[in-house]
Image 1 (cartoon, rainbow, N blue to C red):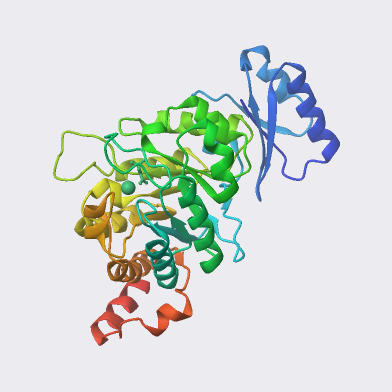
Image 2: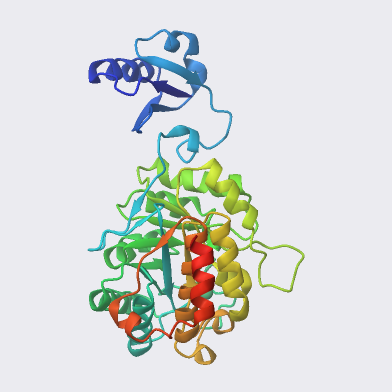
Amino acid sequence: MIIIVRSALPGPELDGIREFVERHGLRTHVSHGTDRTVIGCVGDARAIDPHAVRTLPGVEQVIPIRKPYRLASADFVASRTLVSLGDARGTVVGGEELVIAAGPCSVEGREMLLETAAAVHASGARMLRGGAFKPRTSPWVFQGMGEEALELLAEARAATGLPVVTEVMDPRQVELVASHADVLQIGARNMQNYALLAEVGRVRRPVLLKRGLSATVSELLLAAEHVMAQGNRDVILCERGIRTYETATRNTLDVGAVAVLKLETHLPVIVDPSHAAGRADLVAPLAFAAIAAGADGLIVEVHPRPHEARSDGDQSLTLGAFDALMRDVARFAAAAGRTLGAPSPSATARSRPVSAEDAARDAALVA
Ligand code: PEP
Ligand code: MN
């Protein structure tokens, strides 16, 4: 049940409504927006008479929730969630700025990680990705460098200032990963690992929750609900392609789901075009489609020498291809009414000269 109250309702009246609801065994969550204040109520709403709530002073509307998710529902709050990455420049996901995360599928060593981190930072990425614990389909292939990779990621963050996102696969490793990473990634294969979701729900680190290979939008939102129910409201959803009968791409990017999520939830939604495509040459068009559908950011695999990559080399962009992608993304961002943070000065210095046609096209797109 959702209770909408007068926006400038005095504290004692607001508390009175909350106490009334809580006396009936429900929990309340207050969200203050510019136009309205919303009290979300979680628990068995049958225990409470909506007409009685309607008569309390300050109550404007009582809306029953029929959807299975509540904390993640757009109806439940007065404004969209902004997830703060905790870096010095104050990057938030879910606001006007598109936030791009980039980096290798797996951390494979110090040099390649630092080289990639510096390059993607220079091209305008706001977050560094890199797998330490890898969920590999086969047990006989590279499983990630583990704790050593976490230390390298922390070193790369110190060198660039980029917050770090990395996957955690096991509830027993949440504390360890959280002590090095800024954002905890839950991989597609673990989207319904409820013990893991609960564990990341108990830590104070944003969670990047990837959609399962065969999960519906509703199941993804219920997975987010598992995290949020433990107290962690900083969840970023990620569409990364789903399994369909189509084999031309590694997965099928569900662009429609991005648009649906933007309506259904207040949580930020980003897109992983790399795992959807499975091929480097399809990453850019899928990234553009994601932005057009309303994505709040992207997570892109980048490797200095994709042919040497120990995982997902086929879909990894070179440093140069990522730099070019960022320039093109800037145009789509402008067309979608979003901003893209400026590349760092070193990238501007080595940016390719803008041709007269490029400049004319930019002007037309921004106009
Ligand atoms: C990854 O990000 O490298 C990864 C394994 O992604 P997913 O869980 O979406 O397959
Ligand atoms: Mn990968």
